[in-house]
Structure formats: structure tokens, C-alpha cells
Image 1 (spheres, rainbow, N blue to C red):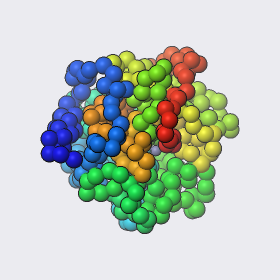
Image 2: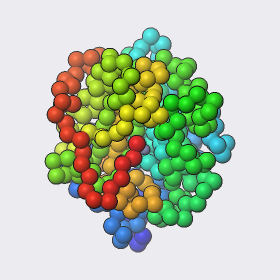
Image 3: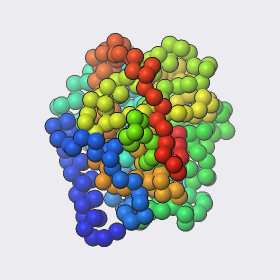
Length: 356
Ligand SMILES: [Zn+2]
């Protein structure tokens, strides 16, 4: 990467992190949809991404600043990294939402957005929602993959920078295929998510945040992301309906932005996938949100150039902000879900691959 583009990328990421409310920033329409994907000339620089150590430091700083925030270590990764959960529990009788990022370690911008969201919760602007909703955030479940500290070769990963980021955990397991197992048989990161969070807290909603490849489109235009509710046939229909409402809040929020353009994710019905398995096991309403483009991958078409980073982080923040507000004020119960009947599955330009 040349010096100029590196500087611009750093500026672009820094700019987003200092926006605060973000909503007043005017952004050119369709920037995400038109954003470049990796084309062989553009470097993908992983060193601008928050490291695990920086994430831990950030969370502790926020905990010291925010009286409503409590950190919990829910367990350890394969390599012994503490897995953190940020908790805002004001009243146990309130509805509770869990935001989960980086089951796949190479999908990091959702984590950057989740950290920004946590920072927002410490400001007067959004603090009032905490009286009516409990919020749990697990950023970077797969911290070993995010740091490229894994027991397999990362030689074929294409990003530049001081580390690679891998989809799988250190044992080369896909953590989003663990959710139908007995917990004792799960990989450590999935096991502690189930045993110490899903089985312990009374959670009503989950948004499972991911990144897909770069080549998905709807109506001939690249999408900024795609969404899907649980599709396993054994999930309680009432939970599916609640999940569709969660998706509706997100859809209306993102589609109202000039740069947001969502498709329906064409995902499987297997109970091993979090979106399905967690809905099935715990009667939690779930939404999969796949943002455009990954931070690193062996396949160039999966990796997104960094010009879209700011929008994708903002898309995450808007998603989290809008859903906590809709749950807090009860508007999630009356949101119009009819778009689900007409929203097309995203389609794929050649050389694309899925994610979930
Ligand atoms: Zn993923």
C-alpha cells in the first residue's frame, strides 16, 4: 500500500470513530453500493483494525466512565484470550437484546461498530434507552481468529498488515456451525457463549453480525448488506414473527439512508447455524445481518476495499441504535413487516461466495 492511501484509510477510520452520533454527517448516496472491492491493486491493510488488546483496553476505559456498564469475562478462547461481554442491565424485567460480533474472525467492521455503539451508550444522547432495555454486547467472540493466532496456515490470506484475520477459530472450526451440538462438544468460544450467556441470561433478541463477500446485489446494485430471520422449520412461528419484526426495524433504518441497500440473505435452515439454532434452543428472536465485504480472506472477491469502511461501521452503529430504541419504546411490536414478502434474495455476480 502506498503512503497516501494508507494515510487516507487511517483518516477515514479515525473520522468515523469521532463522529459521535453519526446521524448528522452527510454522506454521498450509494457510497456503499458503489464501493470498490479488492481488485488486485488496492491494498487491504489489517493494521488499521482494532486489535484484541486494544479492544480490551477500550472496554475497560468505557467501564470506568460509564456507571451503567459492567464487563464480564464469559470464558476463554482456545489460545486463552478472555472473551468479554459488555452488559447494561438496568432492570431484569426489561426486554434484553444481545449483539454478537466476529464469530468469524475475518469479519471485523461490525466489531468496530459495536465498540462505537458502546461509546454512544455513555453519552446523554442514547443513555435514556437503558431505562427500558437491557443490552448485552459480545464483540469479537473469535478473538484468536481475529488476531490470526491460529493452528493452521494463513499463507493464502491476501490482506496486508501486521496480522491476518481468519474465519475459523484456532482449531480451524467454524464457530457458526456449532449451535446444534451438546455444549460439552462445542468449541470453547461457542461453548461459553451457550453455557455462560444464552443459558444464563433471559435474552429476547439476538442480532448476529457478520460480513459477506462483495459481489451480492439487489435490483442490479451492490448491497450494503443482507438480512435473514430463522428459517429452521422447527423454530416457534411466534419467534420467527418476532425475528421478522427485529429485521423490519433494521431494514427501515438502513434503507432510509441514502447509502443503505439491503437484500435478503439466502441462508440455510440447519440448526447448527446461530440464527437457527439459538432461536430453536432458547426461543430467542434472531436476526442475521451480513455486511458487505470481509477484512481478510483467501478469496479476493470476498475482501472489500477500505473506502467503504466508514459506511459499514456506521451501518452497524445505526443497526444497534435503532433496535435498542425500538425495543425500549415498544415500537418494535407494531413495526410494518410486509417488506419481507417482497424483499428479493440478493443475487450474486460471478466469483462470489456466501458467508454465514
Ligand atoms: Zn460470518
